Length: 78
Image (cartoon, rainbow, N blue to C red; front, side, top):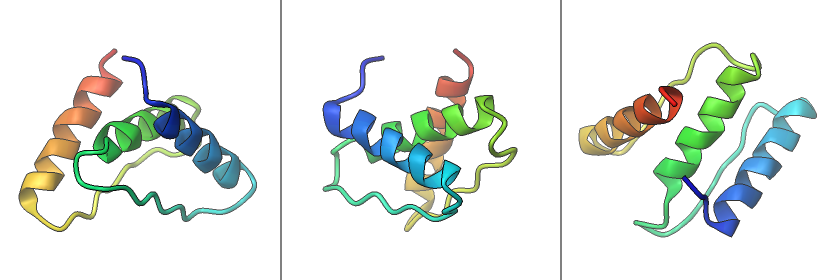
């Protein structure tokens, strides 16, 4: 799946920050912008690079958490 330009740039920035020793990163975008897809791709890259071994999602609702869980599952199965 092709990411939007902002999503790819955000992932690159987050990976750079993480590799530079910063363990926190905030991505802010409007509803429907594609944050879940971006976060799933970022998590997949972190997992496959052995930079993390666990992904935890904190969300404002169970619906958002379920959507992220499904997106991450689909992304990591590729």
